[in-house]
Image (cartoon, rainbow, N blue to C red):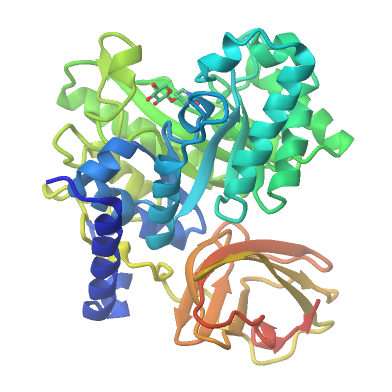
Length: 492
Ligand code: XIL
């Protein structure tokens, strides 16, 4: 029954290859009732993620095929926390975290790293160590340097700082706050940036989904960090919600943070209800999930939504909120719940109910190829763009067989460009495995990255950035030239 991680990833790769061979692109493009969530989210240029339990990932192929088949992003539920990676001083244990990173890579998924500096799940040797403030500062710095350094180029984003505020907006008392003072947040972000300059660095918290004292304190902090030039790229909204209590100002709140110039993400979504559940409550829960996805999609800088736990048997909720549960997208038998269909529909999929099979395990989405999408809304124009364009293509990180690239396109002309597509040819068989902030299609060597629905226009002088993870074989040359809507751009 139990399979080794090596065997699981082999199985996943074989399934991916088989799916890619057996299913023509046209079949994949038909967004039927069972279209995997990751296909729908990728077509929207967004992430749909899940918090993954290491035990279940290694112990259940039903579980791991849903994780790979339905999600284009993963977060370690516990495996990257300090108590997991350094249970006693100097005794580093990366096995579970490495497993998840390898799994993600094999399945064309991005990894959200969680979490570097938090008051909870700090190992006992720190909390009981009687260390001086200076020593604690060094230990935190070393921890961040070691962990973010280990996964440099392999994680898309880090929740560098987790849960720093009380509900009334004051700083939460913690070993870091109490010993290092307010500066521990800026310091942690700076150390993480030094260790992994390419990762998007987040501050993450709960009960900050609506506009309230806590979210406003977080907002003020992010604003001041940005003003000081502290490296912060995103704000994570955990969204551990109670049935029927999605804040009505969720979208407005996400937008006010985005307006500070940071990405936003829903990082730990679950919607708990009193158990046992019933059909009415499950339908109401589906509506709550729909609202959250819809709010994210309405904010250009909302990169995606991660659900906290794959299924109701796997959720942290019953253990922490007595009498509550049934908070995730799948029931205890891994059957898709109405919430699954609501998420699919909110991402533009069919509104039909989920299939009893649990929707898509072993489905085409376990392919590591970029998700297919509808043809771009406007074909590339053959006439040159007045004023031209530049494209900067940077390999942010590279490792054996894989890489992360950032692409920035700039409209150098004096008029706005409507729907757009950036195109290039890979020179050495590289393959896009998972992209963000654009809709990717690849046919042979030819790649197009089209605007997501929420970023159709490029104003004169405006730049737009997107990125992807890719695979490579013997070499990974930078593409020789790039086009924007068919016109060759200057390479920046
Ligand atoms: C939870 C995990 O789900 C549990 O398995 C663990 O026992 C405790 O932590 N906010 C966070 C997450 O940032 O790391 C927490 O995860 C849930 C609340």
